Length: 589
Image (cartoon, rainbow, N blue to C red; front, side):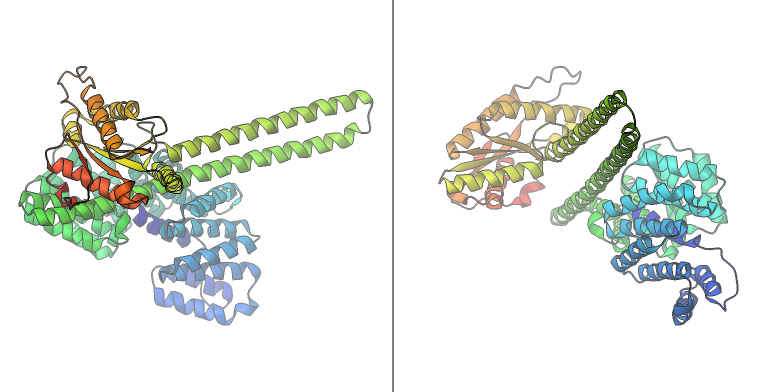
């Protein structure tokens, strides 16, 4: 929840240790030190120092010019011009010969791309910085690299790596401010891993951060303490803790932290049944959130407002907030997937790079041996051939391994990991291609959408493990009902789709009815507390009435499906050339 906030916090840390803080101005080096000292504490003095350096720029050494350009990049970040800052940092990284400068530039890129959401570039820059770390002489600067690595890996859901780097930083007896931030990141990783959080350790970390006058990490840690209390049923105590420190949170001016704390309070007040307070804090969370489409505080706020409106029987407001909640939650989940994919892609690229380096090293070794062997006898020549064949075999082996990894990633991008059928993106791509072929051949096609009835009740009553089992059984049953050549996929949650080419509306209805029979036949007797008969609502549409455009076909099938829900569920409804119910019936369904 504080991923973007922690990026900003450790981006400041990354630049705080760029150069020793001290010195009187006068020459360029003194001005650089003065700019470093004023960079986050006094923006006006920082800008004034940069302006003086600009006037003397022509007499600066190469290293001083690189340091100055990095400070200018940070100034761009402060002005919100992130893309220009990244571009300038990349230029410094490519131009500089000094290891420490390149290390700093890579850390700056990694932090800034966490804001611009260029995740692949950020991870590649971080990996490059970590590879340079052993050659950096400044121990505090190396510690900064560990802190940045911990933050970015947490952001990409790699909490085990985030915990590892945070604990590496803490083991090096870091400076007090670095220690405070490292503790915060470590608790974030532990929370992400689902580990038990020690209340005494959290309180110790809060006291440490308060001593360093770091309100952002200290109040972030209070958020974890409140979550721990709430998980143990101490909801009122958790809400009171956060409300007591709310003025300090709002005084930080960081929208992400403000949105998070208000969102937690709204959740807790809703649990306590205080609807007016829950609504007030949810609205404050929305006001405090930025880039709301992927902000968890905004998702939480819309969910709370939806629950409040529902309890007040204000169905119109409930529907509006539910739609906003669904849209925000989907956007947030899409970003989580994008981060996870960027991490996997970065690891794959790193693995390929290392394999290429290894292969080149082996090839160079072979060339060296070839020069030596050319001076020897025919026996040694035969030995060289054997070694060359061995190297080629290793190269072929690694090429095969890389190809398998690529195939694996391609399958992960196309197949739903739970049910093993096509995911939403792959199903749509296949469906659009199939519809295009049908249109060219003047053939009719039909789409069947089905959404499980009362699936949330199954999850709530029997647990997500039972819900996952039901989804797998439904997928298997529907596949049995499909004809050869039909497309079948899971669109998300409990919604599935079947596209049949060459079939009319009656064929689609027959497939839907067969799916009903197959779902009703699923054996749920294995559970102690019997799961109800599994049913779904079906919507059918055909290209004869809707055309071969996937969006239009999907829209009419979706409307027919929600008409089936509105008419009592467990039935098949088809799109016809007459008005149909609109999707606003989702709440009653």
